[in-house]
Length: 355
Image (cartoon, rainbow, N blue to C red):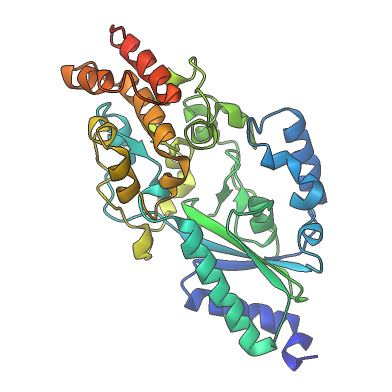
């Protein structure tokens, strides 16, 4: 055995140092026992809170038993990377201006999947330089992985009442990634909960999707409705979405711990194409070619053009009535997509217009 492997704590310390040198905000290490989380996950699925995200249920226990997903896994290296872009317009200013489109802060720059995966791979390469070949697999929100539970076990923070990971030092505006490995590394002490009696995230949720502390009904969550849901958005929820056309940050923005949120140093996460301060009508006027060009390399591209227009139509339906808004909506009243037509019709009706 490589001599380095005889000292699990020293190797774990080295991995954390290498991760920091590669630009990660924090690295932690967890074992693979997710038995407590497995029970909660099964109950959540049984309630149907996953909605149309069938992938949340179809993998059985692979999500809660890492060694079933990647045989031989002994430890999980959990990594955190801050994403809050500098110089972005204030989120509440945007949400309070019905003419503008609010896009979740994580999606204002380039798609994080590739950035995070490449950096995790570099960390694996660095480890291999010191220990030789070892078993591992890198994940970036790309497989059945309970990343928040694992990050909590790895000491990166705790699962907040909004179900996102929270850190006392940096809030919650960060991405998570994992390395499943067969290295017998020393593990970290799990994060301790510091939510206390605070219910700010539950109180502010526009659709009241946080149905209980630490439990979200995804079917009501605006991030789910604008990103994961591929069909019509339920009519009763549309007025509550406001101008949030891709994701929703309300529960994070109101969280007291996010006063410690760190701006990212990663240029790929900086604002592109003025998406932090752009009108609904401007975005709705993009043809499909413009959408694909401007969203190339963005997480937003993955939802597709029709779903993008669907979300914008809802935002326009909730906007203050102006001749410009009515005109741009009418321009798509006969759109080739039934999904778009239905939401445009609803939006026009909100402005007292018929198609």
